[in-house]
Length: 396
Image (cartoon, rainbow, N blue to C red; front, top):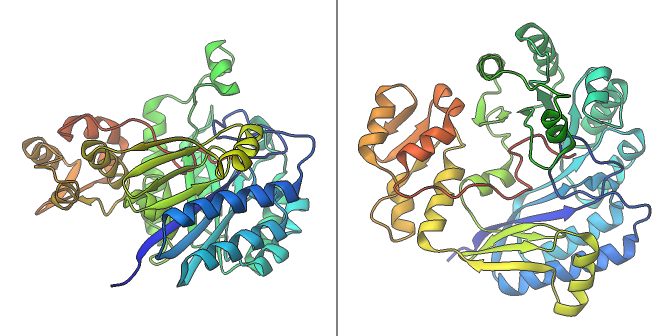
């Protein structure tokens, strides 16, 4: 019997500064003891490995925060430990989120030597004014230079852009997206600006200092994005992610297809053997917990069958491939997870497709996914997703 697949998420919580749109678990610290953090992450990883023996490791993802601030030697130590703990897949995907700052881009060669083979670069915009509005620490010129450096060092490179900024028009976004599609990457993450609670942008909206884009304009921008990426051969495979066939993020597909993944590091979420895990969010609390408990777990809970099925439904319908609703119900020992008459009504309205028990959102359906989930779910789907999932503008 072959080993069950497993993904590993490693959270590096530190950033140079906090972006005003970011609600990820990121922290600014004057100094970071790299040796202390390396040892803590390795101990946390070893705890997960003891609970998940005999698995095949299919991907490692260094997220944040800003993992490109991590010493390459720390990344190498974690990769070496993970591949010692578990059998590594022949095509093991090892992704690191990176900022385009020149200092961090200078580490790309060392990170590649450490074993990283895929980089997700947080360009966010090609316009200096937009970058300043987003609180980014790099210029457009630095972004293009970092992308060129990344493409020289890694076989697989993706980059993020944020669109739907206040004042964005179809004309302005089409020019930016057309340029992005000429830059030679085979994966793009394109996120509409989302005003997340607890962020500086949320406070600005509350004070009347920032007016988000109106919903109709945002919908038109999303539809245009879908059309342009499809025409360029990078169709959407998830709500905000676009790739040539075979170049999808295998790590993130594990999330969306509801596979097991171990999460280590401050604030990291994990899902293993029917259990949800969450590490301590604050870096100092995580560091003190590891020697005390042998791990950094702050919360751990068994998922009920209904909770697991709901999460699988929410995750899976983010994908253009959709889900097999009957297979999910069987997996969790439930009679049904969707209301089939409501599914069929949404098929008739052009928001879902259905082939047997497999359902998927159409392009129109992806615009209304929250509403669709509320309509078709037998029980209300759980709200919220693990922080490290790239469902909104990423921190890196």
